[in-house]
Amino acid sequence: MKILVTGAAGFIGSFLAHRLLDRGDEVIGLDNLNPYYDVRLKQARLDRLKARPGFTEIRANLEDRETVFAAFRTFRPARVVHLAAQAGVRYSLENPFSYIDANLVGFGNILEACRRFEVEHLVYASSSSVYGANTQMPFSVHHNVDHPLSLYAATKKANELLAHTYSYLYRLPTTGLRFFTVYGPWGRPDMALFKFTRNILEGKPIDVYNFGRHKRDFTYIDDIVEGVVRILDRLPEPNPNWSGDHPDPGSSLAPYRIYNIGSHRPVELLRFIEVLEDALGIQAQKNFLPMQPGDVPETFADVSDLVQAVGYAPRTPIEDGISRFVAWYKDYYGYR
Image 1 (tube, rainbow, N blue to C red):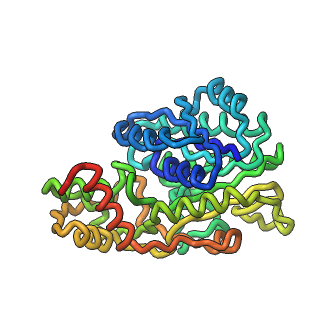
Image 2 (spheres, rainbow, N blue to C red):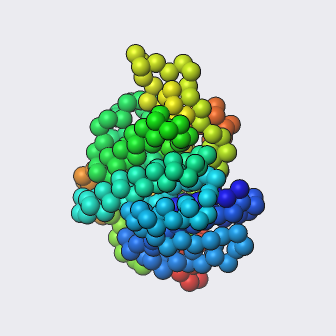
């Protein structure tokens, strides 16, 4: 089928586009290659996709409504996977308007385009950050998430609310996916694994926030993509048991669903660093620091709804995932 993937030059978007092309889908990839991190890496991901039959690139900003609508009008995608967003928790403290423009205005444009051009399923990226001040573990899609701790998290929660409104008013099937700390080859330079690897190889210290006591549900990129593809092929249906007396945040009377995609095995940051040190064969110089504003001490995904819906849960251990990342990093940046 014809599928529009926004954020196709991004980490998850590029992997997803390859996977869809592998199975014979036609992929329209929309991205603006913004300079939030190294544009050369984004371009390299995009170049690999452009070399493949069945891929079409659109260079556009999400907040450019007419260009977004023109893309839908021209290509008429059957389904849409919306991954493009202004990412990063800490950067939202420095540049809030980039989140409002891309994550709120841009998402509104995607929703309206999906409605107008009768897209049969919109799958969009939410985030584990929406759990915010929640402390009940593991995080479940059936928990209330009304207390985000960063603007980034707030925009992702807002996306879920906007999507529900469109599902209810226009019967647009929407599925939100709360990703948990995605890592792997071709990953983002602003993420811990990338920064740690770069500094360790260059003999520089690494900043270890919360004194290394963070726990994260590190999820390997292939596991994320497998979950996205399976959900894309499963159109959400209304929950006939939903009740306004005891509202379930993860479902609705509308064709709307929310799922966690996480490894469901949280790992302490210090253990994560140990595995990286083993893969590199180098001991890291650690600069221990307190927790940063907007961070949460732990993430832990309950993926039972994902398993029930599509029979799948992430399974790659960090030892394998980090080893694959290190091999890619050394090859891409010319380390011998």
